[in-house]
Length: 479
Ligand code: ADP
Image (tube, rainbow, N blue to C red; front, side):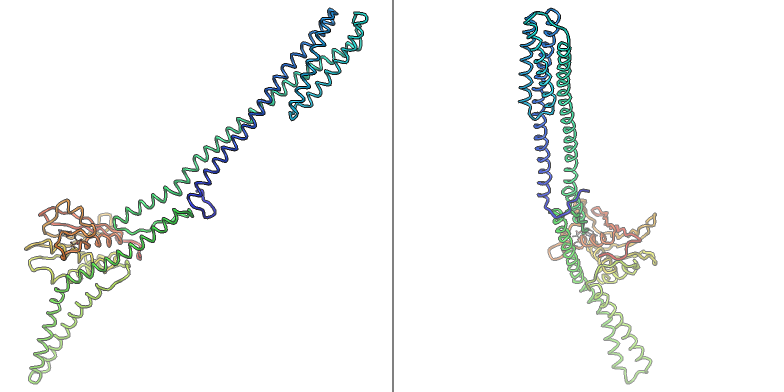
């Protein structure tokens, strides 16, 4: 993945990429403009070279005519074209000072001048006798003529190949720039997806989890820009939400304790009464009774004190704020403790049954799970009017990976509309002051923290069943 080695903002990254792109386009424009200008200069030269080539051929044609028919017209036409030829080479030499063909121009001009000198000498002799004397001079003229033709052909060929190579170079540049543009076209979306789309996707998925009550921190991508800062800020927010959620759990727990307190006072009242009565009897019969009877009374007092102590301790244990920790705990013990805490709340007309295998141990946070069962049992009690039953059972799933716990009540049940909102925070159908609407949303959060799932099945008038699925094995300590 493309990473910038230093810290720059997203805006700067985009500017750098666009800058590179514009720079590339401009360079391509400047280079191709330069090449096109050279091509047009070359085309001018090639046109002149073709013209010169024709002039040279004309010179040679009149030279041949002159040698064949020995006429003054042929000689004059040869002279005339020769002058044109020399003027044309001089023009090319002057206008194309930077051209690579300069040595060829010079060579051609020298040959033309030598030819002109030789023709001038021949012409002087001819005008005296009107006869051409064949010999070294005519041989030289033919040789120079031949050289002129070869040089002008060479000049045309040379310019031709120059144009070809510039066009080749231009098309090579075009291919390179197209590839660069294609590459940038691929890199920009990749960069965008790494820098913007991926972090957004991560946040989108994380917000979905948060909506479900899972406070998962996202992995921060090392993009060293605003997106990294957004992800870091997001994680801070998740941490804060988690802290608040824990506070809510605690306040809901205190509210449950409030609900339980009347029943617990009642529960405490029984052992206290027994202690009081045993004390009274022991005091009044102290002098008359035998020591065994007094011992029995003291034993009663001891037993009832332990009972009262047990009730107070379990309440204190429940109320204490503790770190979330997963340990192998016995499911039946946790459920029994919860049932014990609410027992005094449950009217005699409601039968509570617990059918959980004795040796079923699972990774759990005992306090949080006790809170779950308390919430479910209290809700179930409140949904039953008159006689009814609350059945709690557990079984291991067929694949052996999970435990499925069912909390069923024969209460009123709820309509589909209400059922879909049961786990929403602050959703309650109870009268003001009677319900906070937090119990089930907190229950949901606790089960999520255990890597488990909770669902509800209910229909109006047909009771309600909460199904909790908990993994048999999981990493043992989670924040
Ligand atoms: P609260 O009990 O404070 O209202 P909860 O989140 O525990 O908050 O429950 C939300 C709502 O779900 C309750 O008000 C009640 O209408 C409904 N509910 C919960 N458990 C049951 C149940 N076992 N049977 C019928 N309705 C239930």
